Length: 303
Length: 84
Ligand SMILES: C[S@@+](CC[C@H](N)C(=O)[O-])C[C@H]1O[C@@H](n2cnc3c(N)ncnc32)[C@H](O)[C@@H]1O
Image (cartoon, rainbow over all chains, first blue to last red; front, top):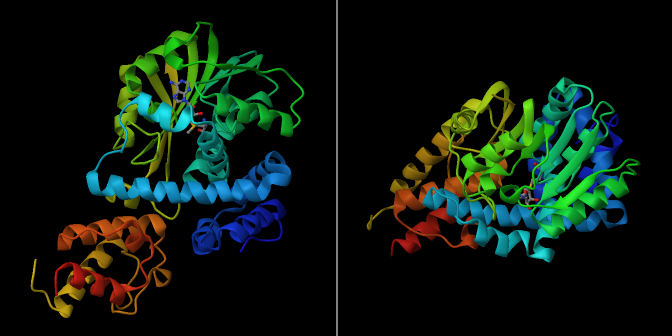
């Protein structure tokens, strides 16, 4: 299913299908029409994921299978009720973030989704190829909610950044981010801390990543204002929010990319660029028509 | 939505298949299954089954949703739920 020129991707697909054979037709559709550039990126991502998982690859693949099944249940609720199942941070915290064994599996599953879900891969590629190269030399970078840690790792590898920090509300997430940096052999220093964005200790950054976090908080406008306070004048944020995307810890439903972008502008940002990535197999038009998941990403500058 | 014969059920299901899976132009009959339709993956299947629930005012279990074999079996489940 995967051309021989992309051996890491091919072997990761094989490992995943050994655990989750029912996913074969999905994965072959996922990669069928991918351009060489996208396959090359996917192959790189696959190599990183294999290194992170190491000898536990089959566990990671099983965690992804479990995640896919959990998402189906959330999807059933979402399609029936037209809303997400949970609506408070306290519920998501109790059921997910503070539930160590659950959160570990969840974050591992999300790691593989970076490759198996076309919208996730597309946003990460946009982050690496468009957002990071646009940052000024010497920028101080922070990610809120790094989870699996791949976004933070890509930023840390960028030699022009002066410093890199990550804050997450979940101890399990911090442990996973730490393990990712260790497995990938990162030689430098990164500051990881257990911090809730709403109790941010202060500090100044020139660049902040907020990817798949805004739909997890009760007051997205306040979260964005907190981001703006942490940014130095002219600082930039990479903000990525999936719309119509039910998950066990998603509490705020954005129904359109425009709703996301309006919220960002109202919180005091100018949007410099946007990127829309529909769910695997769908065109943007179809995703809009059927209210399917679209990752809505903005590069925003503090006004 | 009580008395409904097989052909009325199939007609309604056909409409839903055509709306959701607009790239599929083959026949919709009892043997049709998700494998034959490129756009019919496991997430689309949820959307399909919930549209069917709404059309027939029935409720499926999770395993009826995820374990769907083909349109023929679905017609039987619907008929049973409608009390035929
Ligand atoms: C879905 S993961 C995102 C991982 C990664 N950034 C990505 O885009 O794939 C969401 C992360 O946000 C964290 N999070 C949720 N609410 C938070 C808050 N109020 N403050 C800090 N982190 C939070 C969660 O613990 C989790 O690790």
